[in-house]
Length: 466
Image (cartoon, rainbow, N blue to C red; front, side, top):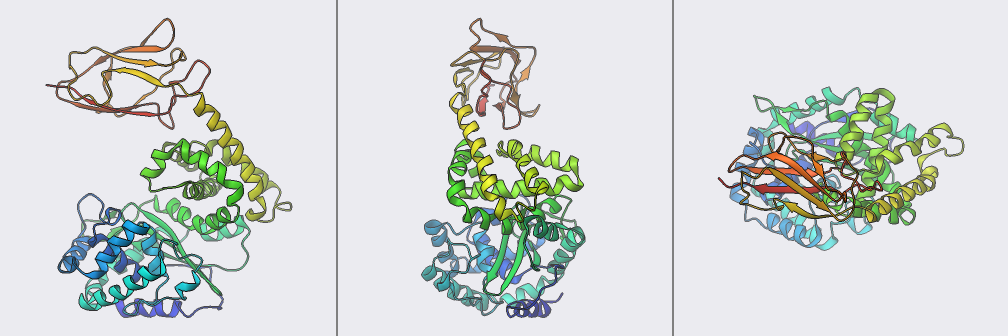
């Protein structure tokens, strides 16, 4: 696909309102997405400038925009991130609601608040930003730059099509969720998105298109984009947002208490993944339930691995909730679509949130640790790790979670005090070494009170002197 053809495809898509769509998934880079994420990268947004060696394409973007770091477009973008949180998925969401460069015009009047346009884009500052975007595209000669990167852009589309071209994810989601009609899908490689993936799309009066943006984490030795096996579940995950998020919004009153409970249960884990509030946590919950059901139909082992991964990421409630969809699948006459089933699902989620809240209230607390968490001068000759809790703990049950390189060497079984409140682990420390591990984790929860309530995971770090 050359630059001229890419631009024509985007222009044609903008006028397909009201026309029938094929269910065939299309693949290819989108210059609107690439340009806005390039501006975010130049403005210092870490999600678009992730750590690690930059690929040739990324270095080319950096060199291209380096002379323009003081441009009004970047200054406005930084201000909007600070004031309105326009980051992460907000960038591709805005890009997909614009006409192709150089116009970058609104596909639909933003005053009408298009349904899928991210709400963080406030009208006045967004329009001022877009005026600056048009200016920078012309000043930096965006057409010339992206023409110079044609080989990489073409290769990205081919690589994604090779990996996902046979996926049944779009059709499966439509059938499973009970969505009638045809929904167009265009999967977009995000060459500056790194490990981040975004479930974007456009829904206007007579036009809907799903546009999952899949980050490219790897480039081969020739600098060409590469997508691995994980792209399949990620594709499904991001597509599922287009189905799940509207259902969560529609039933938010019934889901809100559960969402707030889940977010409170794993707030640090959620925020570390940019799931910054209860509603986003609930979006992710329903999406992950859908992905697990999809995987279970063709890859039972993959579904089991995915559930373990989700649990490690803090979604401890999924294990008890994924079975709730059994009733939906058995009786589609009662629940013809997932929308009809949402009240039943909300009830299951509510009960699980209440169960987790009760466990959390009964959770033991660590009251003393030797060496102290955060210490920087631990004696390497120390031969015991002491953990003391506020209540009796289950005998012989514990989880010290960490890599062999980062955790202390435990040389034997721990000694538990007569009252059951403390453990003394025999250990071996090295001199001048940082240690990092956790007591329990979302997956491993051996530290439990005598009543069975697990300790909430505690991250531990300290360093020996030497």
